[in-house]
Image (cartoon, rainbow, N blue to C red):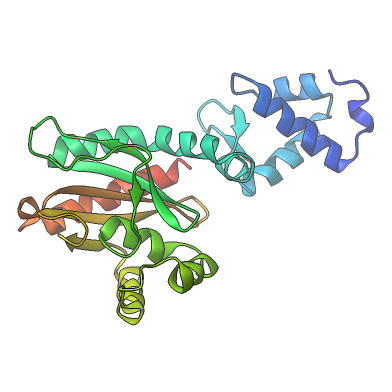
Length: 245
């Protein structure tokens, strides 16, 4: 039990809870948190409920155990956020690749450019090759355009104002982004890499906030006639990932 925990003010209690959860190697029950912090059960329950609503803590519905939430990871440490995101996405991306034979890619907006944080490739020799840490242009290809279309308005304005090559038609790109937001996906062929195509959708967390891009990439010809099938699978996977965030 933390010394003097019962005398902590509200801020001190929140800090105590978050420090405990972040330093623990395991998820914790409310009883364990109570024993380790000394915060009365009724008060602890109220604070945890508030933190859960704000996604600073996550409660597993099956085990009733708590751990730091994804929004706290995002505010505190981007690498932890990315790890949490890829942990949630990996099983769905493996299934996507097995079902479609295409390369699955997840990326996020890092500064004013796109960043691949996870990928899964099919076993065949001829395929789209990606790698973790790969930089992704925001003005060409479905992957980058989904990132730019669904990011915060202020970030999009900064990219449009100063983060694009001079040869990019900003008015045309802005119109395309509006279409992408309206339809909820982007499909491109040979916009970024010769002979390559990709289809991408946004991933939203449980509060409806944009978290990442999820897409499938491969030879442009391999998408012909399969667009609806691939889009359906992508949307299902994105929804499943988002529900876990």
